[in-house]
Image (cartoon, rainbow, N blue to C red; front, side, top):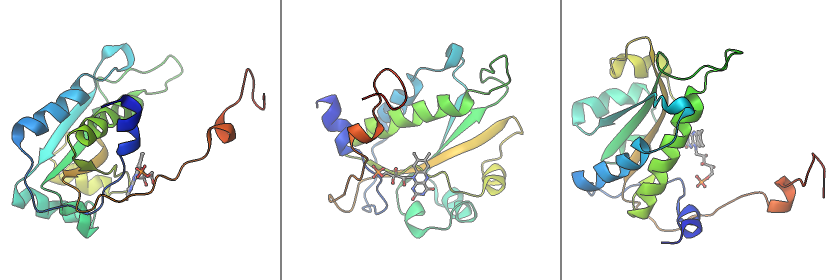
Length: 172
Ligand SMILES: Cc1cc2nc3c(=O)[nH]c(=O)nc-3n(C[C@H](O)[C@H](O)[C@H](O)COP(=O)(O)O)c2cc1C
């Protein structure tokens, strides 16, 4: 599939079929995250896959949207803050690294006809408890992974002229 076609195909899915995700397919999607670039190549990501019922039920305290738990796989992408690169002024690049990895994952999933949805709105302290995270591992985002129940979606984006500046801010 052409890359731009894949980017257009990926969209947030919030309704999933009751259909399992083959483990080989899941691992190939996660491989796309593993291969992501990161600051200094420090690879601060930690992927936690939640599939079993007990773990999933506990996730209700993390995000109580019913569709969140309707996918067969829930992925938590966490940042190992003891590993992430910090710039001299203190800026921690971990969140950026995690975002790149998860973006690779969502695109790889779309290529396999799987749906995902970035979840940034969750209860982080509950996530820490449920996932048994040590203090230096921070939960950054979740995504459900599963087959979309519907194929329709609407891509709402600003136009390129609205966001594009030539040579300097405001340059036409
Ligand atoms: C960093 C980030 C956090 C997000 N958090 C949530 C969330 O907590 N809940 C949700 O339903 N969607 C969440 N989204 C999905 C966005 O709403 C969605 O990507 C945006 O509306 C564009 O739609 P699209 O993904 O279908 O192209 C998040 C997306 C990003 C990139």
